[in-house]
Image 1 (tube, helix red, strand yellow):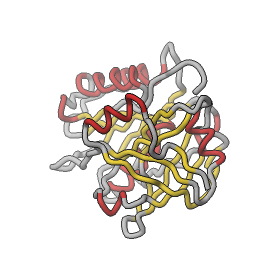
Image 2 (cartoon, one colour; image 1 turned 90 degrees about the vertical axis):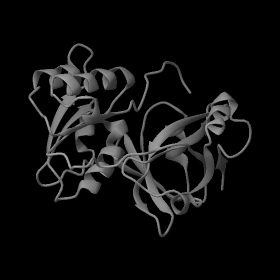
Image 3 (cartoon, helix red, strand yellow; image 1 turned 30 degrees about the vertical axis):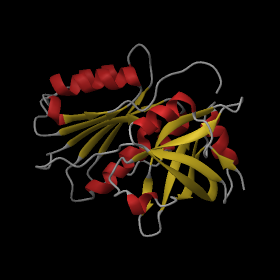
Image 4 (tube, one colour; image 1 turned 60 degrees about the vertical axis):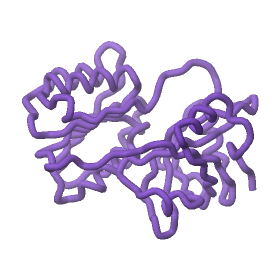
Amino acid sequence: MTETGVGGDRGIQGLILRAFGADDYRLTVTSAARYLTDRYVRLEFSGGGLLRERPYHPTMFLRLWFEDRHGRPHQRGYTIIDPDPDADAFAVEFAVHEGAAARWALTAQPGDVLGATFLRSAFAVPEPAPTGWLIVGDAASLPAINSLLDELGESGAPAVIWFEWVHDTDMDLPVRLRSHDTIRWVRRDSEAGIVAALRSAAFDASGQFGWVALDTAQTRAVAAILRADYKLGRRGVKSQAYWLETRGPS
């Protein structure tokens, strides 16, 4: 058994989270990594009391702690999926790329312990219920998208999902489409890509609800398009950047 990101000095990130009232948990791995595609893996955890203390909601996330190649701690946000509150168990999915989180996930074994921090995570389906959903995301936000679709269920309003992909196998990712949902695959492209796709497809979507989770710059741009071009307004869009492009190994 190994312990990663548990206790010790977490630097300025840890101090900031604690100052805002974050709580720490010790997650225990209950299954080794299972590949969903060649670049995407799933691990299962016991929550160390998390789901007994925190009511679950769709898109709920934790900050998981890892160590870089120099032993320095850093955290990344990951969505809780397939929760079992009675068993205090859930899964987390990791995109496989360069970085400490992916390296840890690929070598984790049952019994390993991972430090986690819960700060704030809140989302509820709007009331009155939207007439439709406009969801925009990518591999990083897939778990949150799936948790939202699960919550809506077959009786919920239909969703159109714009999904940004990079690798061919991204289109094999397990998007949990319901029978009345539609997915539009958009390749990541600096010249056009998902921002241009959303702008060109704009229509009056009044009464629907937008949910956006991409990288920082595109999240901001897409949310603005949904509010203005799709007539959703400020209250009709929930947006949160899920990642920020960085350079260099971690």
